[in-house]
Length: 144
Image 1 (spheres, rainbow, N blue to C red):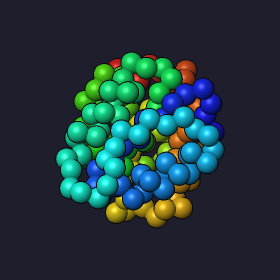
Image 2: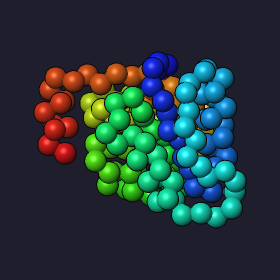
Image 3: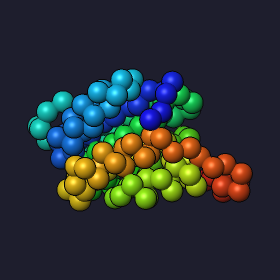
Image 4: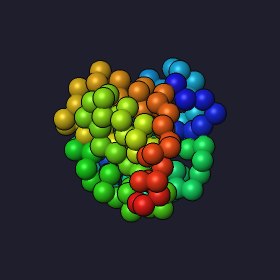
């Protein structure tokens, strides 16, 4: 698990319950969290929460993010509009690993309607414990 960084986490109403499970999971491991909401099941607009997390991650070396909505897609589309944010939708831990190794993704996006809880937690753990490989991949990231 990552050390010395903060994790900004946010969700809309569709991702709220999975977000809470992830918060509990990371809190039990003493991960420093910034909870950007939402804080209940009331209907909200996902871009508001994606913006909060993306703002925390953008241009900050010591912050990574996790976003959860129904599909993961709306959060990713919104977050990727921010400078130096590379948000990746991950449906399994293999994808989470590669997005860190090859793309230096700094925000994990999960679709609560399309992933089981155990796999989501595995994605979180793999995403936060995998390092960017750099070298040949860096030139590609610099083109984004």
